[in-house]
Length: 94
Image 1 (cartoon, rainbow, N blue to C red):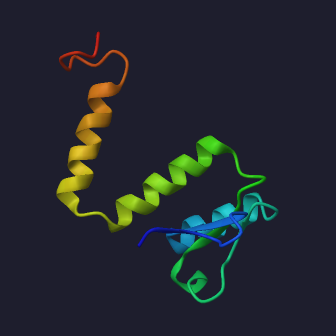
Image 2 (cartoon, rainbow, N blue to C red; image 1 turned 90 degrees about the horizontal axis):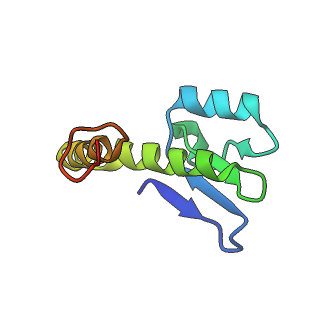
Image 3 (cartoon, helix red, strand yellow; image 1 turned 180 degrees about the vertical axis):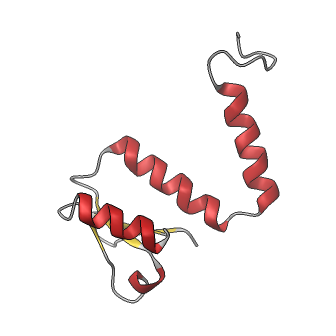
């Protein structure tokens, strides 16, 4: 498990490192917090009304990367590299 959504849909929690958790909470305490029970393991609570959507996407991907099998992460990374502008991958237009 790498993410969870509250029953009311207002808050989510994602898996993170303790260092990421501390940085996020320090930078935006109105958006990020330390959830009960799993916060001691680095998880971060996120207020969905105030989080930047792009940052939320990045946090979810990073949380998934910590949980997914290495081969799956490698395949994801290869696909992302192929999609980058200027890539020489077939069909990338670069």
